Length: 387
Image 1 (cartoon, rainbow, N blue to C red):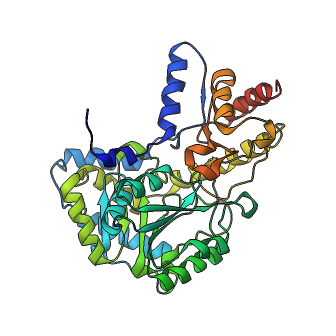
Image 2 (cartoon, rainbow, N blue to C red):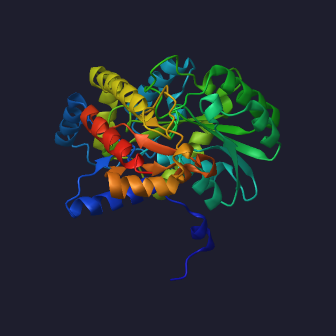
Image 3 (tube, rainbow, N blue to C red):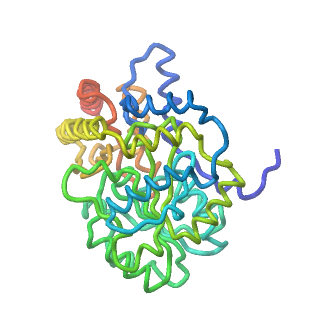
Protein backbone atom coordinates (compact mmCIF):
# COMPACT_ATOMS: atom_id res chain seq x y z
CA UNK A 1 0.00 0.00 0.00
CA UNK A 2 1.43 3.37 -1.04
CA UNK A 3 0.66 6.07 1.50
CA UNK A 4 1.26 9.80 1.52
CA UNK A 5 4.74 10.63 2.83
CA UNK A 6 3.29 12.58 5.75
CA UNK A 7 1.90 9.36 7.25
CA UNK A 8 5.45 8.23 8.03
CA UNK A 9 5.74 11.21 10.39
CA UNK A 10 2.67 10.33 12.44
CA UNK A 11 3.24 8.84 15.89
CA UNK A 12 0.94 7.04 18.30
CA UNK A 13 0.19 6.54 22.00
CA UNK A 14 2.10 3.65 23.54
CA UNK A 15 -0.45 3.37 26.35
CA UNK A 16 -2.88 1.66 24.00
CA UNK A 17 -0.19 -0.75 22.79
CA UNK A 18 0.69 -1.76 26.34
CA UNK A 19 -3.01 -2.07 27.15
CA UNK A 20 -3.39 -4.51 24.26
CA UNK A 21 -0.45 -6.60 25.53
CA UNK A 22 -1.92 -6.60 29.03
CA UNK A 23 -5.32 -7.68 27.73
CA UNK A 24 -3.67 -10.53 25.80
CA UNK A 25 -2.04 -11.76 29.03
CA UNK A 26 -5.38 -11.52 30.82
CA UNK A 27 -6.94 -13.63 28.07
CA UNK A 28 -4.37 -16.31 28.98
CA UNK A 29 -5.59 -16.27 32.59
CA UNK A 30 -2.97 -13.89 34.05
CA UNK A 31 -3.96 -11.31 36.64
CA UNK A 32 -2.78 -7.88 35.50
CA UNK A 33 -3.02 -4.63 37.44
CA UNK A 34 -3.51 -1.74 35.04
CA UNK A 35 -1.42 1.31 35.89
CA UNK A 36 -0.72 2.21 32.25
CA UNK A 37 -3.86 3.91 30.98
CA UNK A 38 -4.63 7.57 31.68
CA UNK A 39 -8.32 7.24 32.44
CA UNK A 40 -10.25 7.85 35.69
CA UNK A 41 -11.62 4.57 37.02
CA UNK A 42 -14.78 6.28 38.26
CA UNK A 43 -18.19 6.36 36.59
CA UNK A 44 -19.47 9.59 35.12
CA UNK A 45 -21.49 11.39 37.84
CA UNK A 46 -25.17 10.42 37.93
CA UNK A 47 -26.52 13.92 37.28
CA UNK A 48 -24.51 14.10 34.03
CA UNK A 49 -25.73 10.68 32.89
CA UNK A 50 -29.30 11.66 33.69
CA UNK A 51 -28.92 14.86 31.67
CA UNK A 52 -27.81 12.81 28.65
CA UNK A 53 -30.78 10.46 29.00
CA UNK A 54 -33.15 13.41 29.18
CA UNK A 55 -31.51 14.96 26.12
CA UNK A 56 -32.00 11.75 24.15
CA UNK A 57 -35.68 11.65 25.13
CA UNK A 58 -36.04 15.31 24.13
CA UNK A 59 -34.63 14.62 20.67
CA UNK A 60 -31.12 16.04 20.93
CA UNK A 61 -29.93 13.56 18.30
CA UNK A 62 -29.45 15.85 15.30
CA UNK A 63 -26.68 18.03 13.88
CA UNK A 64 -25.81 21.13 15.83
CA UNK A 65 -23.60 24.19 15.18
CA UNK A 66 -20.07 23.23 14.15
CA UNK A 67 -18.52 25.29 16.94
CA UNK A 68 -20.88 23.91 19.61
CA UNK A 69 -24.31 24.63 21.01
CA UNK A 70 -24.67 28.26 22.14
CA UNK A 71 -25.77 27.24 25.66
CA UNK A 72 -22.67 25.09 26.17
CA UNK A 73 -20.32 27.70 24.73
CA UNK A 74 -21.81 30.24 27.12
CA UNK A 75 -21.37 27.85 30.08
CA UNK A 76 -17.76 27.26 29.04
CA UNK A 77 -17.12 31.00 28.66
CA UNK A 78 -18.49 31.56 32.17
CA UNK A 79 -16.39 28.69 33.59
CA UNK A 80 -13.13 29.86 32.03
CA UNK A 81 -13.79 33.52 32.85
CA UNK A 82 -14.34 32.57 36.48
CA UNK A 83 -11.47 30.11 36.92
CA UNK A 84 -8.83 31.97 34.88
CA UNK A 85 -9.78 35.50 35.80
CA UNK A 86 -10.24 36.62 32.19
CA UNK A 87 -13.20 37.79 30.09
CA UNK A 88 -14.14 35.08 27.57
CA UNK A 89 -16.51 35.66 24.64
CA UNK A 90 -18.59 32.55 23.78
CA UNK A 91 -17.66 33.18 20.13
CA UNK A 92 -14.08 32.31 21.11
CA UNK A 93 -15.13 28.82 22.24
CA UNK A 94 -15.04 25.79 19.92
CA UNK A 95 -16.49 22.49 21.18
CA UNK A 96 -15.01 19.31 19.71
CA UNK A 97 -15.40 15.53 20.12
CA UNK A 98 -12.68 15.21 22.74
CA UNK A 99 -9.89 17.66 23.47
CA UNK A 100 -7.42 16.17 20.96
CA UNK A 101 -9.07 17.79 17.91
CA UNK A 102 -8.25 21.22 19.34
CA UNK A 103 -4.61 20.17 19.51
CA UNK A 104 -4.79 18.81 15.96
CA UNK A 105 -6.64 21.82 14.52
CA UNK A 106 -4.50 24.48 16.20
CA UNK A 107 -1.27 22.92 14.95
CA UNK A 108 -2.74 22.58 11.44
CA UNK A 109 -3.94 26.18 11.47
CA UNK A 110 -0.83 27.87 12.87
CA UNK A 111 2.25 25.97 11.68
CA UNK A 112 3.78 26.04 8.22
CA UNK A 113 6.47 23.69 7.00
CA UNK A 114 9.76 24.61 8.69
CA UNK A 115 8.18 26.66 11.50
CA UNK A 116 9.43 25.80 14.99
CA UNK A 117 7.21 24.62 17.81
CA UNK A 118 8.46 24.16 21.37
CA UNK A 119 6.87 21.34 23.36
CA UNK A 120 7.46 19.70 26.76
CA UNK A 121 9.56 16.53 26.85
CA UNK A 122 8.71 14.16 28.47
CA UNK A 123 5.20 15.06 27.37
CA UNK A 124 2.01 13.84 25.79
CA UNK A 125 3.27 12.09 22.63
CA UNK A 126 0.67 13.58 20.28
CA UNK A 127 2.32 17.02 20.59
CA UNK A 128 5.46 15.91 18.79
CA UNK A 129 3.51 13.63 16.45
CA UNK A 130 1.31 16.45 15.14
CA UNK A 131 4.16 18.95 14.83
CA UNK A 132 6.02 16.41 12.70
CA UNK A 133 2.90 15.56 10.71
CA UNK A 134 2.43 19.13 9.42
CA UNK A 135 6.12 19.39 8.50
CA UNK A 136 7.08 21.84 11.23
CA UNK A 137 10.16 21.44 13.41
CA UNK A 138 9.56 20.02 16.92
CA UNK A 139 11.80 21.67 19.53
CA UNK A 140 11.76 19.81 22.87
CA UNK A 141 12.15 21.67 26.14
CA UNK A 142 13.31 19.21 28.83
CA UNK A 143 11.23 18.85 31.98
CA UNK A 144 13.75 18.30 34.74
CA UNK A 145 13.41 16.06 37.79
CA UNK A 146 15.71 18.48 39.62
CA UNK A 147 13.12 21.26 39.07
CA UNK A 148 10.12 19.09 39.98
CA UNK A 149 9.50 18.60 36.28
CA UNK A 150 9.50 22.21 35.28
CA UNK A 151 11.87 23.52 32.60
CA UNK A 152 15.03 25.57 33.00
CA UNK A 153 14.29 29.17 31.97
CA UNK A 154 17.76 29.54 30.47
CA UNK A 155 17.20 26.44 28.34
CA UNK A 156 13.97 27.95 27.08
CA UNK A 157 15.65 31.25 26.21
CA UNK A 158 18.21 29.36 24.11
CA UNK A 159 15.60 27.67 21.91
CA UNK A 160 12.97 30.41 21.59
CA UNK A 161 13.55 32.65 18.56
CA UNK A 162 11.74 34.57 15.84
CA UNK A 163 11.06 31.34 13.94
CA UNK A 164 9.15 29.95 16.94
CA UNK A 165 5.46 30.06 16.04
CA UNK A 166 4.00 27.99 18.88
CA UNK A 167 4.83 26.76 22.36
CA UNK A 168 2.83 24.01 24.01
CA UNK A 169 2.42 24.07 27.78
CA UNK A 170 0.86 21.32 29.86
CA UNK A 171 0.09 21.94 33.53
CA UNK A 172 -0.67 19.81 35.48
CA UNK A 173 1.40 17.50 33.35
CA UNK A 174 1.06 14.14 31.72
CA UNK A 175 3.24 12.08 32.36
CA UNK A 176 5.00 13.66 35.36
CA UNK A 177 2.21 15.18 37.45
CA UNK A 178 4.28 18.36 37.63
CA UNK A 179 2.66 21.79 37.93
CA UNK A 180 4.11 24.97 36.43
CA UNK A 181 4.48 27.98 38.70
CA UNK A 182 3.41 31.55 38.02
CA UNK A 183 7.10 32.39 37.63
CA UNK A 184 7.48 29.73 34.92
CA UNK A 185 4.48 31.07 33.05
CA UNK A 186 5.64 34.68 33.30
CA UNK A 187 8.95 33.68 31.71
CA UNK A 188 7.10 32.01 28.83
CA UNK A 189 4.85 35.06 28.46
CA UNK A 190 7.84 37.39 28.18
CA UNK A 191 9.38 35.24 25.44
CA UNK A 192 6.06 34.80 23.61
CA UNK A 193 5.60 38.54 23.38
CA UNK A 194 9.23 39.14 22.49
CA UNK A 195 9.25 36.59 19.64
CA UNK A 196 5.56 36.88 18.73
CA UNK A 197 4.49 33.24 19.11
CA UNK A 198 1.27 31.53 20.17
CA UNK A 199 0.87 29.39 23.28
CA UNK A 200 -1.28 26.25 23.34
CA UNK A 201 -2.05 25.74 27.03
CA UNK A 202 -3.14 22.15 27.65
CA UNK A 203 -5.07 22.53 30.92
CA UNK A 204 -7.19 19.35 30.89
CA UNK A 205 -6.01 18.46 34.43
CA UNK A 206 -6.65 21.97 35.81
CA UNK A 207 -9.10 20.74 38.47
CA UNK A 208 -6.68 18.04 39.69
CA UNK A 209 -4.41 20.09 41.93
CA UNK A 210 -3.32 18.75 45.33
CA UNK A 211 -1.37 21.70 46.71
CA UNK A 212 -0.93 25.31 45.74
CA UNK A 213 -3.03 27.09 43.13
CA UNK A 214 -3.63 26.33 39.46
CA UNK A 215 -2.18 29.06 37.26
CA UNK A 216 -3.10 29.73 33.62
CA UNK A 217 -0.84 31.68 31.29
CA UNK A 218 -3.99 33.23 29.80
CA UNK A 219 -4.34 35.37 32.95
CA UNK A 220 -0.97 37.12 32.45
CA UNK A 221 -1.35 40.58 30.87
CA UNK A 222 -0.91 40.48 27.09
CA UNK A 223 -1.34 36.68 26.86
CA UNK A 224 -5.07 36.05 26.40
CA UNK A 225 -4.86 37.29 22.79
CA UNK A 226 -2.07 34.81 21.96
CA UNK A 227 -3.21 31.80 24.04
CA UNK A 228 -5.38 28.83 23.12
CA UNK A 229 -6.71 27.04 26.21
CA UNK A 230 -7.21 23.32 25.62
CA UNK A 231 -9.75 21.86 28.04
CA UNK A 232 -12.25 19.04 28.28
CA UNK A 233 -14.58 16.88 30.33
CA UNK A 234 -12.80 13.51 30.20
CA UNK A 235 -10.62 13.85 33.29
CA UNK A 236 -12.56 16.19 35.58
CA UNK A 237 -15.88 14.40 35.12
CA UNK A 238 -14.72 10.87 34.20
CA UNK A 239 -16.20 11.30 30.72
CA UNK A 240 -13.45 9.77 28.56
CA UNK A 241 -15.83 7.76 26.39
CA UNK A 242 -18.20 10.66 25.82
CA UNK A 243 -15.64 12.47 23.64
CA UNK A 244 -16.19 16.08 24.61
CA UNK A 245 -13.55 18.81 24.74
CA UNK A 246 -13.11 22.42 23.80
CA UNK A 247 -10.74 25.23 23.00
CA UNK A 248 -10.88 28.85 24.15
CA UNK A 249 -9.10 31.34 21.91
CA UNK A 250 -9.37 34.71 20.17
CA UNK A 251 -12.53 34.97 18.07
CA UNK A 252 -10.72 35.24 14.72
CA UNK A 253 -8.81 32.02 15.34
CA UNK A 254 -11.96 30.29 16.59
CA UNK A 255 -13.60 30.99 13.22
CA UNK A 256 -10.71 29.23 11.45
CA UNK A 257 -10.72 26.28 13.87
CA UNK A 258 -14.46 25.95 13.24
CA UNK A 259 -13.72 25.53 9.51
CA UNK A 260 -11.49 22.58 10.35
CA UNK A 261 -14.29 21.13 12.48
CA UNK A 262 -16.72 21.48 9.53
CA UNK A 263 -14.25 19.67 7.28
CA UNK A 264 -13.66 16.80 9.70
CA UNK A 265 -16.23 16.04 12.41
CA UNK A 266 -19.08 18.37 11.35
CA UNK A 267 -20.04 18.85 15.00
CA UNK A 268 -19.93 17.28 18.44
CA UNK A 269 -22.74 14.94 19.53
CA UNK A 270 -25.75 17.05 20.54
CA UNK A 271 -26.93 14.99 23.51
CA UNK A 272 -23.34 14.81 24.80
CA UNK A 273 -23.22 18.61 24.79
CA UNK A 274 -26.39 18.76 26.88
CA UNK A 275 -24.70 16.50 29.41
CA UNK A 276 -21.65 18.79 29.36
CA UNK A 277 -23.81 21.77 30.30
CA UNK A 278 -24.94 19.83 33.36
CA UNK A 279 -21.32 18.90 34.13
CA UNK A 280 -20.30 22.55 34.31
CA UNK A 281 -23.38 24.01 35.95
CA UNK A 282 -24.59 21.15 38.15
CA UNK A 283 -23.29 19.78 41.47
CA UNK A 284 -19.51 19.28 41.62
CA UNK A 285 -19.47 16.93 44.62
CA UNK A 286 -18.68 13.69 42.78
CA UNK A 287 -15.86 15.31 40.82
CA UNK A 288 -14.40 16.80 44.01
CA UNK A 289 -14.66 13.44 45.78
CA UNK A 290 -12.81 11.78 42.90
CA UNK A 291 -9.92 14.23 43.23
CA UNK A 292 -9.82 13.66 47.01
CA UNK A 293 -9.55 9.91 46.38
CA UNK A 294 -6.75 10.48 43.86
CA UNK A 295 -4.86 12.40 46.55
CA UNK A 296 -5.03 9.38 48.88
CA UNK A 297 -3.84 7.09 46.10
CA UNK A 298 -1.01 9.45 45.21
CA UNK A 299 0.44 9.22 48.69
CA UNK A 300 0.11 5.43 48.75
CA UNK A 301 1.90 4.94 45.45
CA UNK A 302 4.63 7.54 46.07
CA UNK A 303 5.46 6.14 49.50
CA UNK A 304 5.39 2.59 48.14
CA UNK A 305 7.62 3.31 45.14
CA UNK A 306 10.17 5.10 47.30
CA UNK A 307 10.38 1.95 49.42
CA UNK A 308 11.47 -0.13 46.41
CA UNK A 309 15.26 -0.40 45.89
CA UNK A 310 16.36 1.44 42.75
CA UNK A 311 13.27 3.68 42.62
CA UNK A 312 12.97 7.32 43.60
CA UNK A 313 9.71 9.19 43.08
CA UNK A 314 8.73 12.82 43.49
CA UNK A 315 5.34 13.60 45.00
CA UNK A 316 3.39 15.24 42.15
CA UNK A 317 1.12 18.21 42.75
CA UNK A 318 -1.42 17.44 40.01
CA UNK A 319 -3.04 14.98 37.57
CA UNK A 320 -3.04 11.24 38.48
CA UNK A 321 0.40 10.10 37.39
CA UNK A 322 3.74 9.43 39.05
CA UNK A 323 7.02 9.41 37.14
CA UNK A 324 9.63 7.57 39.20
CA UNK A 325 13.32 7.52 38.29
CA UNK A 326 14.37 3.87 37.90
CA UNK A 327 17.99 4.27 36.73
CA UNK A 328 19.38 2.71 39.92
CA UNK A 329 17.62 -0.57 39.15
CA UNK A 330 20.20 -1.17 36.42
CA UNK A 331 17.45 -1.65 33.85
CA UNK A 332 16.41 0.65 31.03
CA UNK A 333 12.89 2.05 30.97
CA UNK A 334 11.69 -0.27 28.15
CA UNK A 335 13.31 -3.28 29.82
CA UNK A 336 11.62 -2.60 33.13
CA UNK A 337 8.26 -1.90 31.47
CA UNK A 338 8.46 -5.37 29.87
CA UNK A 339 9.68 -7.12 33.03
CA UNK A 340 6.96 -5.60 35.19
CA UNK A 341 4.25 -6.58 32.75
CA UNK A 342 5.43 -10.13 32.02
CA UNK A 343 6.83 -11.10 35.41
CA UNK A 344 5.11 -8.87 37.98
CA UNK A 345 1.77 -8.55 36.24
CA UNK A 346 1.83 -4.75 36.47
CA UNK A 347 1.21 -2.65 33.36
CA UNK A 348 3.20 0.59 33.23
CA UNK A 349 4.74 2.79 30.56
CA UNK A 350 8.37 3.45 29.74
CA UNK A 351 9.32 7.09 30.12
CA UNK A 352 10.63 6.96 26.56
CA UNK A 353 7.02 6.67 25.41
CA UNK A 354 6.84 10.38 26.24
CA UNK A 355 10.03 11.48 24.52
CA UNK A 356 13.80 11.18 24.73
CA UNK A 357 13.98 13.02 28.06
CA UNK A 358 11.84 10.31 29.64
CA UNK A 359 14.86 8.00 29.60
CA UNK A 360 15.38 6.38 32.99
CA UNK A 361 11.77 6.84 34.14
CA UNK A 362 8.49 4.92 34.21
CA UNK A 363 4.97 6.32 34.28
CA UNK A 364 2.33 4.83 36.53
CA UNK A 365 -1.28 6.00 36.51
CA UNK A 366 -2.85 5.74 39.95
CA UNK A 367 -6.36 5.65 38.48
CA UNK A 368 -6.92 2.35 40.24
CA UNK A 369 -8.06 1.32 43.72
CA UNK A 370 -5.81 1.64 46.77
CA UNK A 371 -6.10 -2.13 47.17
CA UNK A 372 -4.81 -2.77 43.64
CA UNK A 373 -2.09 -0.14 43.96
CA UNK A 374 -0.81 -1.78 47.16
CA UNK A 375 -0.91 -5.20 45.52
CA UNK A 376 1.00 -3.85 42.49
CA UNK A 377 3.63 -2.27 44.73
CA UNK A 378 4.20 -5.62 46.42
CA UNK A 379 4.55 -7.41 43.09
CA UNK A 380 6.94 -4.75 41.78
CA UNK A 381 9.11 -4.91 44.92
CA UNK A 382 9.27 -8.70 44.79
CA UNK A 383 10.22 -8.68 41.08
CA UNK A 384 12.82 -5.93 41.37
CA UNK A 385 14.44 -7.63 44.38
CA UNK A 386 15.46 -10.51 42.10
CA UNK A 387 17.95 -8.28 40.28
